[in-house]
Image 1 (cartoon, rainbow, N blue to C red):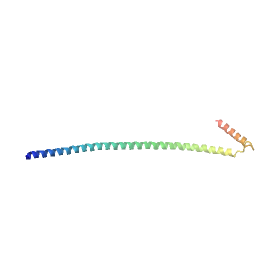
Image 2: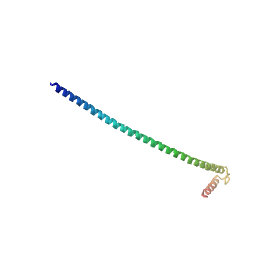
Image 3: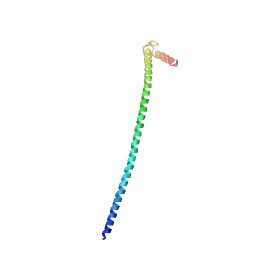
Image 4: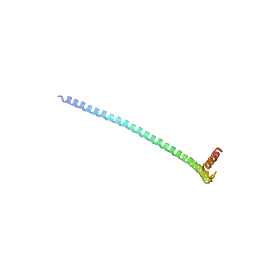
Length: 121
């Protein structure tokens, strides 16, 4: 064989190998850039989600504080009504029977009095 022809074939094989290696490296680089873009999008999405979660938590904390203040006022009012009801219960329990010797008639008299009190505004 002719040495020039051998050199040409070797050169062609080397150029083919270098071209194949170049194309592989180019594909890897394109994939890496694409993955980096996806990672950036994922990072930005995660930051946005975390920020939205934090904002929602702040809103919930504000709402909880507001409801706590409202509930405090409601508890105070309920405690006042509870004291009134306790006093009324003590009065009912300490009252002597309306009809001495007849428990049923006494109970009926108490119920009638209770219904009249409820009907009166």
